[in-house]
Length: 286
Image (cartoon, rainbow, N blue to C red; front, side, top):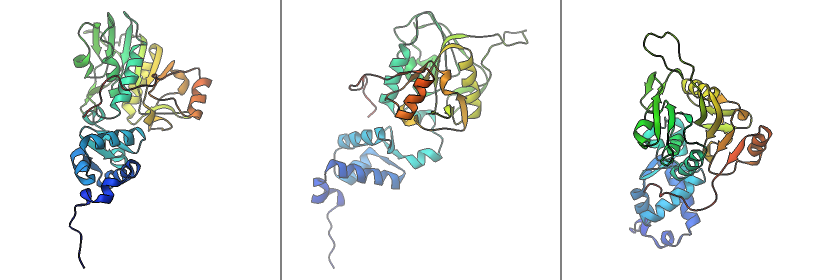
């Protein structure tokens, strides 16, 4: 019996396959491989790297897989391993940028803001370049590096244990001066809080208990609260609740929530902010 020696990626039926069929095969391939690069996918399917990138972007937007820098990871792999900051910075980049721009629009010059650790809040910080005289308190160790130098009047980092994977601190939301045995009472005009999940019943939640406690304290000390989360967080509930749904004044996201969640937001007087339709304001990673 003879066997074809034509590589699968160069076979006529592969080249002629409709894009929808290729995307389905691509999703299955990533699911079986767990993690794969753009180059390997382009070679396997016999198409350009740019075509693969577009397919991966669409599959990521559909929640089928997770787009990473230079490739993709299956959802099953992401669910069983901790999403360290360097990896999370590569996820949902366009959505987070749009959310960040909207959230930055809630910040008033001269105000005091608290910002929790997270890649979505980090996106908001990058849109604060036109603001001035802000007082910022955060547990996000990346913010002192990312914050534009002319924006802050004062910048404070909450102390505590350092989580290297998230480049953040975990500890009390407060400060002590030398010789003082009590925490100073700190308040803010606005808290920008990114969360890992949001649901009508479970409110806002995250996977780490200590982070949830810290985020909840920030919420309690804020005159206004903006919760930030992209659409992949809808309808999910993680280990530790940060706050009930109605505790936020604003929910900032990239897409309109599903009907049941939107109804719950309205019932709790939470204003949902979504960007206008259109192309990304900034290019996504290659």
